[in-house]
Length: 509
Image (cartoon, rainbow, N blue to C red; front, side, top):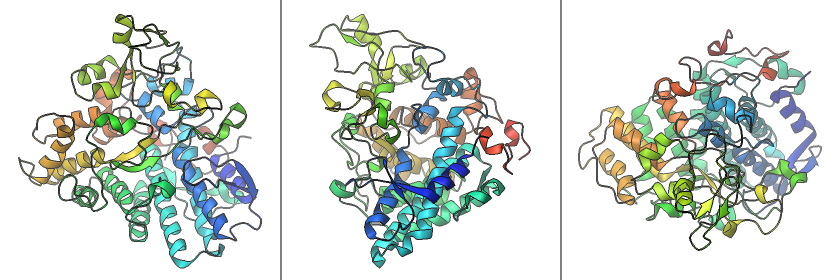
């Protein structure tokens, strides 16, 4: 009998903890420590806290991540790879042949509920860890916010989910019930709202980079309100993050002057970063330790396959990769003459035509690859398996995202959006950063700006669903209205349990 993720998570929590003692919250825990007698010291509380954070950057052993799954399903990318069966779970979301047995759905469900379960265990046990009041209060706030983040993804991706706020014993796992989505959203808002006052306004990035701050949680709450179409509340949250004018955030957030600097691997936790998922090149990870996944697999996935410099003086120092997630021709046509083009797109088509490089024209090749995450010889790890040890961080939320969302929320709330208004100023600050002239604040302009500014960062699929445009925009990929706005509940969760498949996927829930 296949076990559900609930059962597996409960069994893991009851027998052992996955912990790490790294300085930053930047690694997946590897060491297994029995839970018996655990949560007795401040050091044990910290390693448990890190284990809750760890799920943010979770990558499956099959190279699945939230960003590459959702990118493959968007209109900006093809799944790519070497063949129509290469990482088949990405192919099924690319062409919307997804089923309840798909690894993509299982990964996203498992990632979310692993995070929820670890958070609930932490909240149950932290009071016995000997922490001082201030530290305990902060840790609890962080874990509540993390639980809300995991639930936010789960409810957007699956809609019909259980709501677990306490530790559920393995014997009761098959009796959990689903709840209406509005109950999940209510907990998300409650957790985030309770967390904010007990979090620091900023953190020292050298020692605590990646930990949640007040600004990050306000930004998440703003996004939650956007999905609930509570425009006024959303605008108020983003205003707290963004400040009254660009560059005047209470939390010190500022757009970087140079757009391309956002993807300099040495530029972690910069002034534009609000919530950042951290990876490193120092774990010396090999195939025997692939489960720890401390490096960012996107860097090898998106690189051009069989890449060979012909003119070494002119060729970029890309690592030969696996040709996943090439940009579509439609996306390239949109960004081609935009100033963000070169920092976004690795244009192997032009490089090959100029006889500067060669590369394999793999499956669904367009010649346009992701520059933002491309692995390079100049930034690769000194040791360990090459493809498992890239240190490129990922932005879960950055300032340009919240500027554009505040403008959208103000527009939809009926606030003024003409020249000189807050919406106009925030929207056009994103354009001004790359030297573009101002445009009026309209939904068409906001949608195009988000597409170009945030390309390949995991937002496009969510945006299309939130705007109600996915059935039209993604029809050519096989997207079915009233079905593909959510993922199917994995089959293993339905077996021997009270969980029911969603109606959108032929179920009764």
